[in-house]
Length: 255
Image (cartoon, rainbow, N blue to C red; front, side):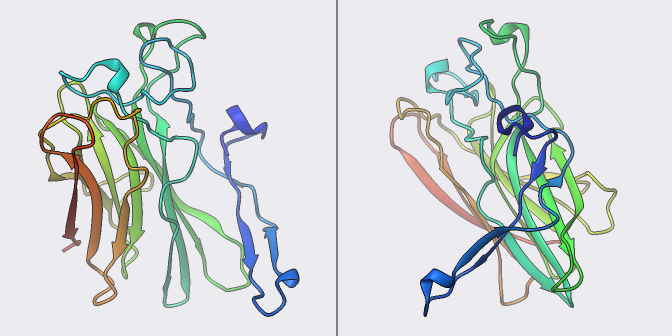
């Protein structure tokens, strides 16, 4: 929950336990956990319009020409991305997910973004607990925005060693919408994707006239054959136009 929208006193993650009783549906429960809301590092998920400066928009992510600001892409920064991954590593339980946040600044109401900068960035979370009855806590979190490129539409997973991978889309006025990933070892400094970024596939076209939609989601999954190989699925354009997206599936793992 973003305190700018939710009315909470701080930015936080809300955690719920869902019990489905298929024999007696009325006995099903959906209850917020005792440790929720779980405080996280401050973030701002608002996404100002690239032309008016309004703080709610779909035209958030810049694209190269011939795209114009009306073609720019939607971050859907008001929610967590697909998917919340669960992994049990020898009794250490892990949940991980990510969202898109603003690593730039928000323009004052009614003013053009020329007085401020919106820059989409991937914010990841790793939650952990060591007993089934224990409480979840934030094992690590971080916002990845090493340069002026927009990074959004992310997905996360951890492997059998506790290393994290994050896949996402990238774009800017000089970078066609492309597919990239970054990662961190369990032993890397907290709050960083210290293993750096790699481009899985570089797009060669821009999207136009599709109401700004991109995705809506991407997916990073762990291969059950080895619990170490990550498979990532995302979209791209090879030629500029409308409804010409293509899908790329790639795999990678830590050494």
